[in-house]
Image (tube, rainbow, N blue to C red; front, side, top):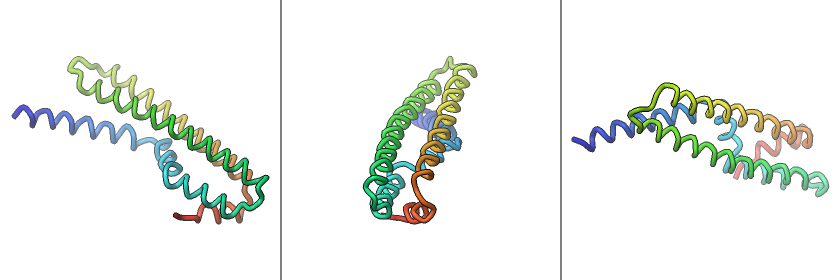
Length: 139
């Protein structure tokens, strides 16, 4: 029976983490431009922007975006850990949770801002036809 009780607590932690991490618009933006999506954009830039003088700054932009994503993922994992630790504490107060959620909100806002900045920079460097072709590029 003790294990069943522990599993119930773990379920609450998983639900709370899902709400925390999947609820924010910034996290959605992060998901749109991470991993495979970013690799597809890189492939599209390589395929559709043939001028090396224009392609190099675009690739540098994508490199910077990828580095930022890795750092933001690390910070999200830290928030997950903090939330899990807070959930496990019997003496955790509402204020303890609010601090974690406030930090998650700030990170979410930062993700949105960075996403929009990177998108704006890419948009400024690509023609409309290049944009359409780059973002239509798949594996």
